[in-house]
Image (cartoon, rainbow, N blue to C red; front, side, top):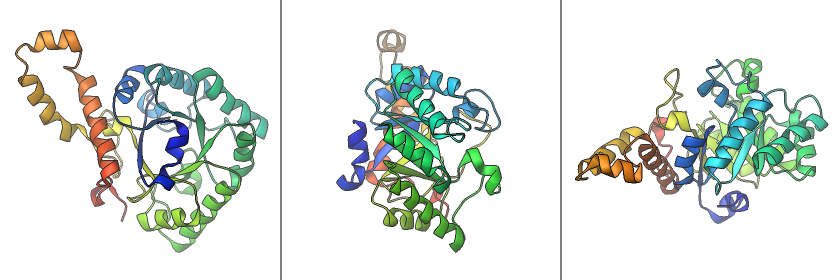
Length: 290
């Protein structure tokens, strides 16, 4: 898919799947899966570098991640996640940071957190010709300001605020909005208030797309797993083992195809995720904040 086809998901009624990714090897698995596009997220600070939050991520680190992902997934649209401190100081800083993703890592778009408070930065980046994806709900970069990592939108006041934030982002030209850790009724209110695609990560079903962190999807991050994160290895492992058992010479098969290890398991897991997004079976109530 091209970025434009991803962003037409709402009008075409086909939900899209995307995952975070930060390195070449897993990007190769994404490239050869049916996942639609990639977010190089600042969560790489935690899952790749061992930090306790996303805040320490720098633009240099993010560009390095994004360049590796572009090499591994040359046909997938890639969104670069602007880290904390790379867009807040001024419009000029925001545009230069966004340009780095485009020029140094060949990203098609950038993502940033916040609503009305970052609207001027969004407008500046859009005016520079770079598509922007907004991010509302649980926004990890500013989580301390809002009481830590928690579900947002449970109160009527918070729900109204999220709707107004989405409208503020649409007004300055965002191409889509990612909603994180929000009850599904609030996500639907947001979707009804705007005309752009609304993607979810822990925001319930019936949206225009679903995102998962690839390390959660593959069970690679042992420190923490949020409720909305489904481990697809559980569902793909049995068939993978059966397919290997059916090979008369597993060693030769592995040497010739390199499909006898974790890479193949990752591709199968990614395909399961993408299929469930299309079918509308993910996220189920087990992975939704009700």
